[in-house]
Image (cartoon, rainbow, N blue to C red; front, top):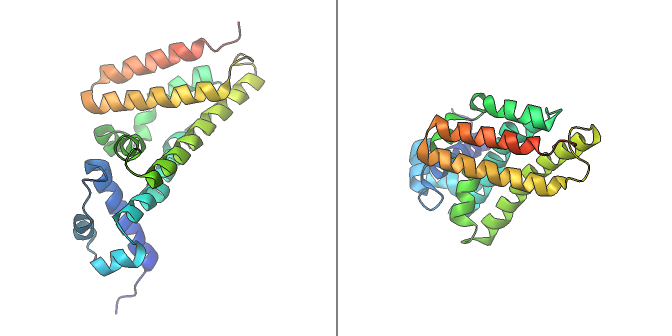
Length: 200
């Protein structure tokens, strides 16, 4: 007799839904396809989620938010000198980014482009996750100011917002072009910009 494990069932639904949303967008994701690929029945879906939108919200909070933490926030937490360390970390990003992100781009930005103007629940959750990312960068720049790596008059939060926007733009263009030249250009210009933040 098979013992049911509701948590494992929920996790399987979320992982499959995340893969479908990442590849096809939220509106292109079909619940019946998620069920087919996860090997589950409709009853399992409705036991955990009230609707497709409810599933989408859970994917944002339980799949995309932890992905941001593992790819970016953990990396930012290891930075000592942002001007030197962050460009080096970009060089090693391929080791921490899942292959699907190179093909389909940033799942957070994809959903922001697709759903932020369509659904307030999506918009608020996306804003919250972006704020966590901005907070992570701002903390790095504040620490850099304290340790003398960054000019004291820099507004760390403004710079953090700019960095997140630049990275999302770089990732988005790379998704389209799939060329090393695009990423090399972004990396070099990010490094040049960070150099302007040094104390004079």
